[in-house]
Amino acid sequence: MPNSNNFPNKLNSIVDVRPSRTTDKDNTLIRKQSSDGDFIRTNVVFGQTLRDVIEFYVYNDVNEIVAHTNIRPNDTALRLVAFVPEQSAGVGQDNIPDFLQIDLVNVINRLDLPAGRYSVAVNFLRDEVGKEEDGIETKLYISAISPSRTELRIQPIILNGDITQEIREFVDPSVPRLVAQAVVDQAFGISINTSSEYSITLNGFIQELENIDIKQQTPDGLTVTERLQYANLEGSFYNSFNNSLELIRNKVLDLILERPSDLQVQDYELRDIIRQATRETLIEMVSFGLIDPLIQLIDSRGDLVTPTTTE
Image 1 (tube, one colour):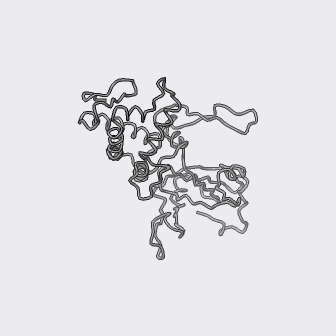
Image 2 (spheres, rainbow, N blue to C red; image 1 turned 90 degrees about the vertical axis):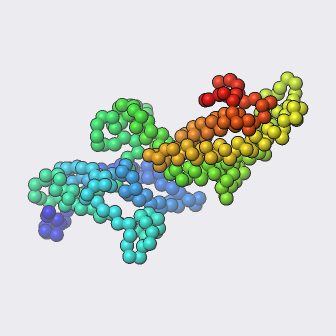
Image 3 (cartoon, rainbow, N blue to C red; image 1 turned 60 degrees about the vertical axis):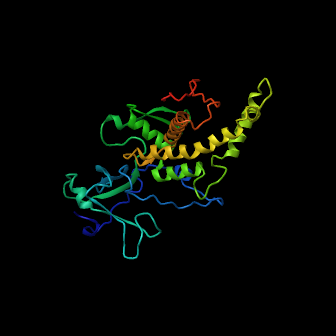
């Protein structure tokens, strides 16, 4: 394909006509800053997810867009080089630059362009919600513009499960399953780097009971602890709490591992898993007599949990 070396005159600059996704003001908002106000350089490795996309815009010699295409990381025109002779770590795992090789001949030949002089602008992006390709079910539209014309409200054309999941992921990004397991270990006091601020402990549980007492102000003036002491159940109650922690933690990990096709876990999913694990564990503890019969558990519907309760 002809290039600038074949012509005496250099190509005109295409900086002003290249499609721009962000303004300088946007860049200031989205780039991380240190405490002294300096920008912190962060690298996002292209090709770690199929949501990454490369936009190609092809211009003629008068800066008119004559062709456009998108390609994904699994395209045959791309090759991500993870290792070089002096590099011992994988892509994005150290400070040594990684290399993305693009076969421009492969890409341009797909566009059926006549022989001529062209320039190419390339944007490296990651789809967060929706995407340009595929059908209408992946598209978004501008539903409202603020009076100041500085804000947009964007909605999916068709609200389906996939788009809903992508919106949740954009607002509250998921973490790898192993990270979720580490969070669970920390929460249930199993992690080596356990912090009492982020862990469930007996002292913290007792403090929560005291907070409940303060808010409820029961007519007889007795606190939860005093009621337990009066019924001679204080030791049994706290033992049941301590025993439940490891059982709930193990149940949470089992439920996470039951999702073999989903290697990422979102915050709301983890909360739901912990609720499910807590409910199932307490029902099992009642069924197997691991909780004193004098201690009654009430479910969210107000029903008494008994050895015959199944859900």
